[in-house]
Image (tube, rainbow, N blue to C red; front, side, top):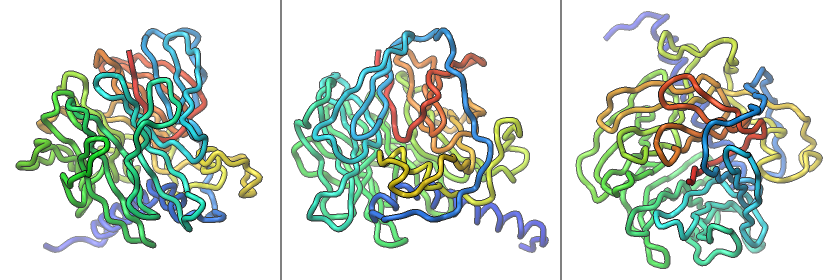
Length: 371
């Protein structure tokens, strides 16, 4: 098939931006795993989304957010905050999810043992009040990263295992019961999540562009439910409590037309996606002076929250925040979505325009919404 020069440019542009945003979304992971001493890539400055916390909040429950080496619990609507320590206090927590019976939290945490040249990530199982882990799903070798845990009704976990070596990356999804060896569910797939009844697995495949895939947990035919050219990369899929929707976050190509529809007032993406030292330092928990970072936040390719039905219908964008590296979690009643980004914590209605700014102190990683 022949293609015009303009068509070739647009195809090449999307492909190039897709590669850059995929690399950008993993800059933090690569930097952590390889334990780089400094980050000197120039930051692309721009206006990032910010919010002023609302005086009143019309939702209830409790948000669990990764912060530092542990977690924080934010009660709603009061916004009373409580630290949930994960001991020992070392490394960086990158997410949290609670078991179906409420007895355990799975917390992926990056850290570097003293005898390892490079760091990696394990999944710690702790009580809802925190403390020392009762069990650990441990990396198999230095530089290995276990993450994105999701619980099944029988108490087993699905999670991704990444092995990074330079610019090469191998990733697969595994399933394991705590204390037992894991087995592979899917090769070259990431970001697993499961339906509340344990029947369906949703994941991301990246061959030839990132696609959201659904299949039975125990194996079977895969069905592509999201394959949209304007979505450069997708992450953090989560089934709604009743299984009727899948929420996920996605970075959209601002050059795509008309599907991207990123309002200019929300913030424009830079042509290249880079994390500045200043944006990385808060997650690492190091003082800014450690890396000589300036107090400036770079704004990258815009991420927002989207939803789609498990059969692939009903794809739509829920937020227009154009945030950096956002994740999402469902409210227990399935009517709301909480989103954590580098800029803020928000709660937005699945239907309608209601939204609440919970906090203008953002973060990175998966969050959980509990009753």
